[in-house]
Amino acid sequence: MTSVDGELFLWPIITDEDLAAIEEVVRNRAMSRSDITKQFEQEYADWNGVKYALGTCNGTAALAEAFWACGIGAGDEVIAPSLTYWASVAPAVSFGASVNFADVETETYCIDPDDIEHRISPRTKAIVAVNYSSMPADWDRILPIARKHNLYVIEDNSHAHGSMYKGRMCGSFGDVAAASMMTGKSFAVGEAGILTTNDRVLYERCIAFGHYERTGLPSLYNPADAQVHQGDLTPFSGLPMGGVKHRMNQTCSAMARVQLKHYPARIAEIQKAMNYFCDAIETIPGLRAIRMTGEDSGNGGWYVAKCAYDSAAFCGVSCVEFCEALAAEGVHVRAGANNPLHLHNFFHKLDLFQQGKPTVLAFGQCDTRQGTGTLPVTEKASEKLFNLPWFKHFEPTKIDPYIEVFRKIAANVSELK
Image (cartoon, rainbow, N blue to C red; front, side, top):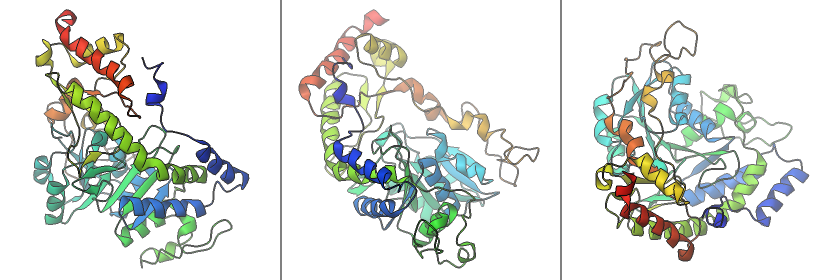
């Protein structure tokens, strides 16, 4: 089926307009300038409903800038979900901090607000909230906890470009938000990242960390932005305070400008196609699409959207076995979710600074290391979730055969057992 319906899944959609924008950058030898990137940043900020956006070389760089801008350093602690990609939290360790991992909710698989507050210690500086698999976190509950304890909120929006939470777009909730825009994401422009914020100080600190040619001094290639003027940053103008270069390649930002023009219409079609499919498969007992409903909410581009699977409704057939049966009928979906980070040696034993002790303990942090059984929902997620087919076009005659395969497998589940 997938070979026949390739256009149904092909992403990102690349047209002559994208190629022309990229070619112009290359012909002008402008790959390492920032003029087009700055245009994209303003357009993205306007679309995302924030004051400032900053393009980076990848999403990991944007997250590192966000941690540093919020003052995360040696001996600090952050609270974050364990069910996420490593870049959501690994930068904190690289700055000498530790991570106290929280469990996730079974409805959204985003961080559970009820598992945050008891983890706060005098060393806690920030809460990391991930909009996981296109699902917005529970911002109505997370933000009051952060404000009560005077903590920064770092929003990882890599999975949720355009996702809406009660009429407001994801990427605008945290004190600072960061997102990947690599080829596999729903907003995909190659290898790039984006940082968004309404806080001028945080914005300038992010520039100071990894954008040396935009910190107030002229260069051979880019005019000075004359933006970084905070007192503790000014003496370092002209050199990146993070000792890194996070500039976005302008072939990516040129493509991003084109993609952004068409993105709202494209994700509206994805939304229609995915909800059509999900409405159908949810008539099968034991399947529940992880999605937002309501006119003022939505899953944006539906990046790696998940379906919750109840094996009890399928005679004990495991999620893996169910997905194998789908694959045998031509519907290829992946069972599982991200591996729990709290069980990885990176957050237990890594001695990044070669001090003879784990970095997560090296600067006086509490020992927040967690073992098997400490985050039950996170640890069971891979047994209960599988990826939904990611339809990019609303074509019912092509989507219906996928629905029929799901119905066929459900109707004959006893044979699987």
